[in-house]
Image (cartoon, rainbow, N blue to C red; front, side, top):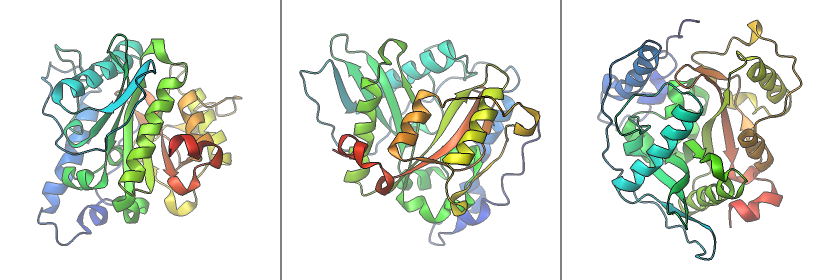
Amino acid sequence: MRELPNPWSSLTDALTKNKSDKKTLSERIAPLHKILQEKMIRLKPKADDSANNSVSKQEAPAVHTNKQNPISLSWARHQDEVREAQRLRYKVFAEEMGARLKPNKDGLDVDIFDDFCEHLIVRDNETLKVIGTYRVLPPHQAKQMGCFYSDSEFDLVRLRHLRSKMVEVGRSCVHRDYRSGGVIMALWSGLGQYMKKNDYEIMLGCASVQMGDGGHYAASLSKMLNANHLTDIEYRVFPRLALPIEELNSNLDVDPPALIKGYLRLGAKVCGDPAWDPDFNTADFLTMLRLGDIHPRYAKHFLA
């Protein structure tokens, strides 16, 4: 495994650019430092750790749904709903995909970002179970947190001037019995409403690719995306723990997975080479979607 590059040199300006912020540099870096430490520690077996279950206090716009539909879309308003989303995440990421998450007796996927995020959920109206979710970290909450989640995987220094307009989305998943497309479209519609209501311009997030084949598919996908769907150079990011593409077969004929394909159809771009996430054993591609770049064919659905 490659050594993790020094994360601090290029983040100093981004984390200290607001001179009115009274936090010291060490206080602002602490959350990112903690995330990076946890990622490295979890490469080895570790003891059980209890989850932090406090609820986010941030307001989010209401999502109106048609009660005749078999599914409904809403924002989690209390801790029980957040826990339902976290339980679905654990079921999909840990039990289905084999991600190495913090073990806890309640079967929840929890990290230190959850308390700062809004949680968008889709329910089956018949069973009332949460069957799809996204979490959303708006810029003022990222500032309070000290960083975006993506900062733990990528050097985002070239994006620092966009942070006030940028929302980070992640931890997206859909229950395996509901992956026909309707749930993810409902989630995207909710995200679009959120962006419009709050006048945000850019959506950023890590799109993950499984590496069950050792990373050859991800390396080939990276080559294809870099050739056809790369951002302009001023928006490039740099992985902290890079996928060793040069050591893998990058010449396979591949199609993007469904989620990335959907992002590309909307008009998203990839910000550079993927990072390796050892916890999830995935190659993570940082994707950027500007609302102004959404293809007109999809804008009426996404931004309705």
